[in-house]
Length: 123
Length: 397
View (cartoon, chains in turn brown, cyan):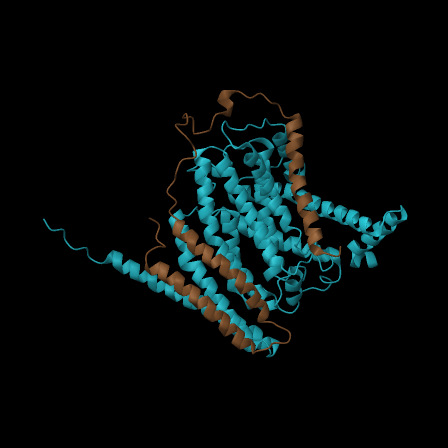
C-alpha cells in the first residue's frame, strides 16, 4: 500500500474486530440466568458497604509529575538519537552527543532535586 | 525456488492477478489483498496464543514439580481447546453498578493492544506487516493502550479490590515506561533508525546484545514490569487483592485478559529478540534469504525470552509497592540515563573507527557502567548494614 499509515489503520480495525468476535459468539451460546446475588459485587463473601468509587490517597502523585517531565523529554530524545547518525552531519557527532547529554543532565538534576527533597519516598 | 525466498510476494502477485482478472480496479484489489494478509497474520498470532496456554501450563507445572496437562492429546497438546470451549459456554456476569460500556471495552482493548504490536514485528527479511519509520514509538504507544485497558477494567468494575488493582497499575505505568523508552533509545542510537526492520538489518555483523548487554537487561526488566508479571504483578496480587483488576470478569471476557497477557509476554520476548538479538538472523546461513528460516528464528527467540520471563515469574516473589517505585526511580531510571549518555559518547567517538574497535569500546563501556553500579550498590548496602549494626544508645529513664 502506498501510505503505511493506511495499512496501520486497517490493522487497528481488524485488530479490534477479532477480539470482539469471541465475546459476541459467547453471548450467543452462553446461558443467561442473572439474579441479584450472582450480580452483587464480590468482596470475599462480605456485603459491600457504601460506594466503591471512593477517594483513595494516591501516594504516587509526585511520581506522576516527575513521570510527565521524563515522558515529554523522551519525545525530544528520539530525534536526537537519529541526528547522532545523520548521513551528512552539519556538525561533529561528538558535539551532537554532548548537546544531548547536557539536556539529559538538566533533567537528571531535576530528579536529584526531587530525591533530595524526599519526594521519592513512599509515605 | 522464488516462493521459498519471498513467499509473501509470490502470493501477493498471484492474488493481485486473480483479483484484477475478475475485473476489480487495482487499488481495490490492493486493499483486499492487504486485508487478507492482515487477517492471516492476526490469525497466526491467535493460533500461537492458543498454543501459549499449553506452553504456560506445562512449564509452570515443571517449575513446580508437577506433570501439567497430559491427558488431552499427546503431551496434553490439545488442552487449550477444551479450555476455550469452557470459557465460551460459561455465563458472563456483569456486577451491579458497573460502567457497562467501559467494562465491556476493557478486555477487548487488552487483547487488541497486543495484536496491534504485531503490525510492526518483522518476522523475516521479507515478511513484516508494515515497516514504519517510527516503529519504536508505535511500540510504546500500542503498549500504553494495554495499560489503559487494565485501568479501565479496574475502575469500571465497581469493586474495591479492582479499583486498588487499577491504582497499582497506574503506579506501575508511571514508573516503568521511562526505563523502557530509554532502553529503546539505545538501539536507536546504535543503528540510527527507529524502524524495526532497520534495527534488525543493522545487526547483521554484531548483535546489539554484544554492544549493549546492559541495555538488553534494562529492557527485559522494564518489559516484565510493563507486562505486570511477577515480581511486578501488584495489579493482580491474588493473595492480597484477589486478582485485582479482573476480579469481576467471567467467561470469555476473562479469557481475553488471559490470552492478552500470554501473547503480550511472548510479543515482548520477540521484540527483545528483534532489537537486541538479531531478529531473523542467526550465525548459520539462510536466515536472511529464506523467509521460513527467518520466521523460525524470530519465533524461537521469542519463545526463549517468553521462557525467561516465565522463569523469573515463578522464581521471584512479588515485591512491595514502595520497593517497586524506589527500585525504578532510584536505580533503573538513573542507570538507564547514564547508560544512554555513555552509549552516545562512545558511539560518537568510535563510529568511524574499525568495527572491532567500536564493538570492543561499546562492550567495555557497558562493563564499566555495570561495575560502577555494582560498586555503588555494594557501598550503599554496607552503609545500611553498619547503621543497623551500630550499638543503639541506651534509652533514658
